[in-house]
Image (cartoon, rainbow, N blue to C red; front, side, top):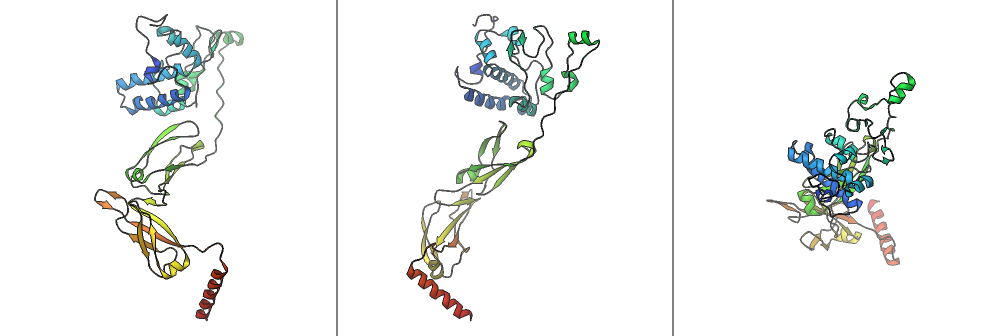
Length: 335
């Protein structure tokens, strides 16, 4: 038991967050976010057990993330002394989950810097502290003002603190994040963790049967109320693109192969196969490989192969002569 504590052993704050003592700041922040999402009462039907766990998680992070509080805890400051030092962030009740996120990611902050005369923001050890919980969680501004007795005596009446300056206006801007998925992840749906520019961590599930090139819209989460888009990329190293149960592939051919027809080796999810390209195939023609797509239950998709004729960037003298002759023949036929 630490020196100066009551008869009840103070909780191990590292264990509350599931960490080893002395974990770095990054691990501390990640563990706190995970536990806070898990135990917040708004997400657990106001379960009393979740409420107590959430309070313990928040109190542990509030102490361990602040050097002064952490030093006080390590020296054995607990119980009533810890509450007086501000170690209990729930002294005034629970915030709503959205407001809690605002408080967590720094949109509203309370002063916790120790000074020689006590905690910053107070007139002394016995001075009334402003209602930080009301300020952080949406109560009226009237509850946040405090009149100094000295100011009343010098001015002849109560003095009300001026209202805080409004936050700066932020222009709405859309943002986009590239999310790469495997064919199996796109087929079943995948959980994606995303950290926004302001530090907010969100969790999104991609819909089942998602396809390459899809854009998922997260409305109003970007700065200024803009949207955040998730650009899905579902491709294999062989160049196969996934679209639901279908597989898409673009086959590049020389003009002569498209005109005369040929046999081409095409990759599939089950391995390479030979595809017969019929004569007279132009760019954009689609050839179907039945049953070579993804499978879901009794359904199985096909693979579509799109022909794309590619002209060489540089021609040899022989090739240039042959293309010239073809050009002459085409002109004669049109005459």
